[in-house]
Length: 68
Image (cartoon, rainbow, N blue to C red; front, side, top):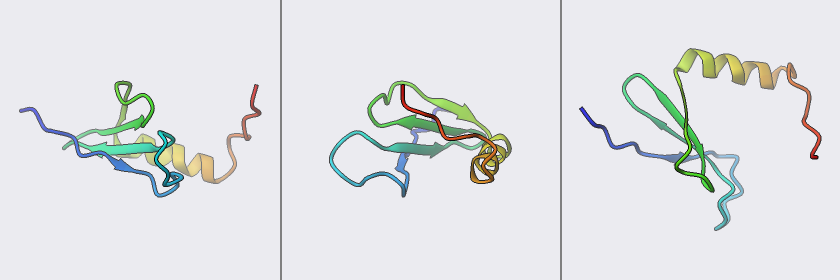
């Protein structure tokens, strides 16, 4: 069965007209993430690994990246 994904922008997006948003969509068993400026490229995962990543980011496990 083919489900149409309903993409939602992150509340942390800048809210402007530009393509600077992280978007999330959910299907019955999978979470889909993409950036607005590259909507054809998606990251897919399930809830548990994404929750683990978010906890790690919030706890400071990953140091802030320095722009190159």
